[in-house]
Amino acid sequence: MVRKGISDKVAIIGCDMTKYGELWDKSQYDLLFEAVQSATKDAGITKDDIDATWIGIFYFFTGLSGAMVEDILKMDGKPATRTENYCASGMDAFRNASFAVASGAYDIVLACGVEKLMDEGGSGLPGFTLFGHPLYPTPSAPAMFSMAATRCFHEFGWTKEDLARVAVKNHDNGSYHPKAHFRSKITIDQAMKAPMIADPLGRFDCCAMSDGSAALILTRPELAESYAHADDYILVKANAISCRTNFPWYVPPNGPGADFTAFPSTMKAAEYAYKEAGITNPRKEIDAAEVHDCFTITELINCQDLQFCDRGQAAEELKNGTFNWDGETAINPSGGLKSFGHPIGSTGCRMLTEITKQLQGRAEGRQVPDAKIGLCHNLGGAFSVCSTTILSQRD
Image (cartoon, rainbow, N blue to C red; front, top):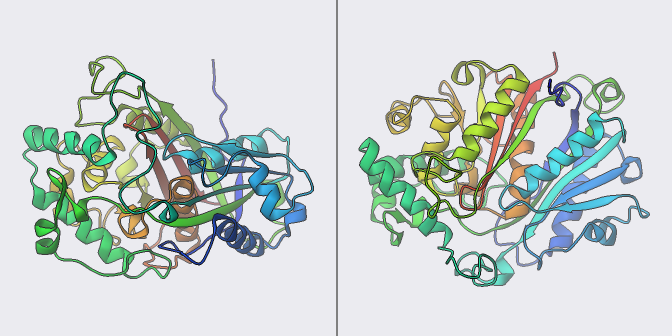
């Protein structure tokens, strides 16, 4: 069976995002409205031109069903669907929207995401006592990824200083981005001495909660030249998703579990995406990547799982500058989740917006030199689901 996929069948013709942060004076409806208004303006369309919408929302208190789109955008009853797939909810909304366009079902669609977390308090992600298996306990997100950190320390000889370099790099990048939640540079010493959250992950090893929204307008390439970005619309080369177990700590690594030095969902989603996009050497071919740095250890593992370096070498490559914004493969030139925080439903759409603008040469923060092909990577749950998207300049 030959999978035809969606490569070169979908074009991004507009995108934008709100500022991310503790946005006490705005509701989720305000944020969604702002992001969509900016994205439609960027595309040179109005909301009346949109045929259907997919919106990524993780938490019920942010919004239930596609009716949230109607409530705030007044789309006259057009199709609207809420997607939820852990932290990959936003990129899964984009995936569904892309397939709708590629199939020919719709001409212009909206993919967006929003989350309003800060109103729920700052003690960590809510819901862990409400969700999950009735018998198997669910550890906190920092606890999940601390297991990966300690295992990588053991297997690869990585240290807490290696994790600190991820935080320093990303906060440095984020200090240049006007829409980042955190815009202050930090030092290795600050990261090393920060209060412990889940050993060995300290405060600067963990992304923060945040509020924010992002939106993208999609159409078919043959229609894209009729809109504002006729000369620089961005092509979707691939979008792939992989789902594994919710309980990797109970499942042996030769099954759907993980050995905690790699995330099988990322490896499989990357395999699918690279095959569809015709990528054979990711390190050489991908110029810029927004990867899911919910924790500093996650970024290092991601770089290996996405084949940007050899297994066990991510910390050394980072130290050598390979992943700097002007390095061989720019990783999180926006500042990533470390600088933006993680309003769950919106993060995937924010990554896609960032890479789209990087490839168009209009990044709002640091511009990666001569970026032509970019990757976005969204990892959710207990390494349970990964969505990977590859974008490129038009041929």
